[in-house]
Amino acid sequence: MSKAHRGTPLKQETPNSGRGKCPVTGQNGVKLLYEVEIDGAKVMVSKMGKATLANRKK
Image (cartoon, rainbow, N blue to C red; front, side):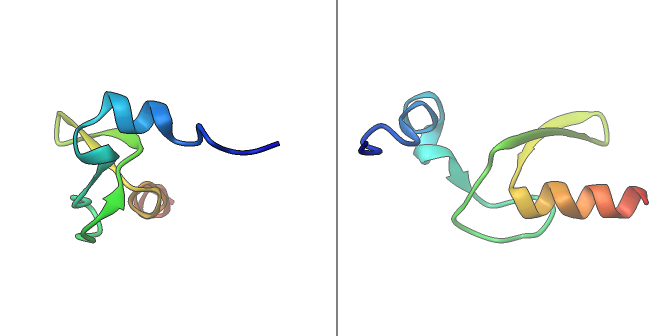
């Protein structure tokens, strides 16, 4: 079965196809998939950014 529609909602619902600069890791052009609260503000972070924040809590 083909994967013709993979990622289509992400591309339709978010600007720039869900890609941008991660505020945690500073990487450019990564998918910002996870909404996290940092200093009282909700921001979108990448998969690596979410893992970084989880590791800081430990």
